[in-house]
Length: 275
Length: 225
Image (cartoon, rainbow over all chains, first blue to last red; front, side, top):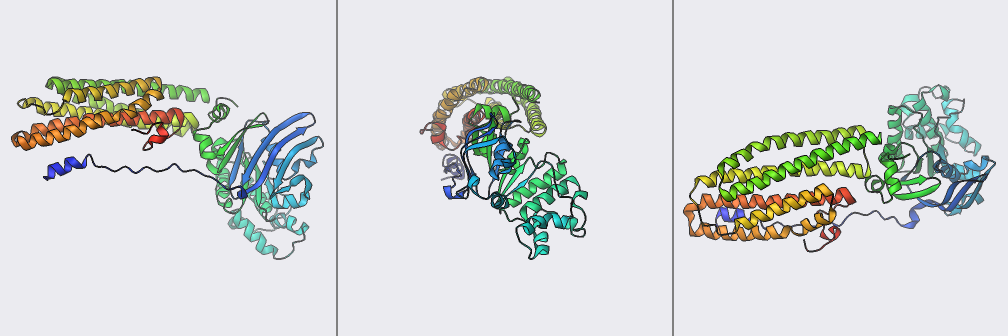
């Protein structure tokens, strides 16, 4: 065969290898927190309507939706922060590790499920005391220096504060205070970290630090984050739930929610058509 | 914010459809120039490529601007990704059509040969694929897009036959090898144009449905691509 004929023939002999589409399927034992038919009321107002949602181990799950859609209400019910609201009532069940959180000691629940709030709220005490306060209350008085260094490193704050551990935590910048609050939550050795709009009071640089931290921390902890910032949800989470008027409209792998949502309401919300 | 984004996306949609219509015209004219050995028309087609290149860059820059400023998601994101790919495919189609015109310029200088394959049928098929692709693109018609992907085998088969026929013709009359090769090359360009039409159709399905059907006939909705 001539070289020309060989070249021409090669046009028609290209093998095509088809790949199966990738799918993420997690077995049920990876569920850490499970909400089952949960409805939450403040007085007569139904803030959360019959929601069932599984939170997967060592994954970041984002809850998004417009103001008043019930996302923070559900988040705060996971570690019983709503116990302090007198008109609060919940039906259905939230399980943590298979146990009904409402029938478990709230102190135990909160030591296993830490929380970071919208605004940094360090205690008016030293950085050291902020971190060791919780463990001391729970009777952990051993190796506190090691604990402080460990959690401050995990919160990416150690290098910035190691020489002033006994200065007031409230003297730190907003971004540093939020990382101190995260370190404080980590000091209790939780499984799950709940974050209620943790970056809404922070500047872009501090926001970026927290987002980087979430990406690292989810290798070790399960994270649930409520956020108004959809780009943030897209960047940091593995799963996303979209809430609207107390109902969970859609829950899926984050990539699917932001590229091909199944529900029109989700699509309209994330593309800015409403909300 | 959303209204502003919608206006930007609509502007991009109009630009890419305008480019598509222009490229369709280049393809039709290049095929006519080849069939009629019209050198004058072929030279004009070659000069049309510059406009396509400039528009391609403009559209891509407009898409990048919207991606950077609006950070779109869901169907807006799919639309922009689809446009970037379709835009590139249109530019490549125009290049191929210009290449057909360049082959015409060479062929027209040479003495006519008896073609061993049906060039008209192949040209008509490439133009039909191109026109249907434009129809699908203008109407965001995924049913037609699927039909186009399904029908790509027709011109593939013609291309295979052309190869065999040209190969035998060169063996029989080696003195005319240059003309035959130019015809072969033009035929090959037509087949590639049809390939890009299927690419555009696949991108159209992604833009509308969010499903990547490329390389996967079972997902595309048929098994005999």
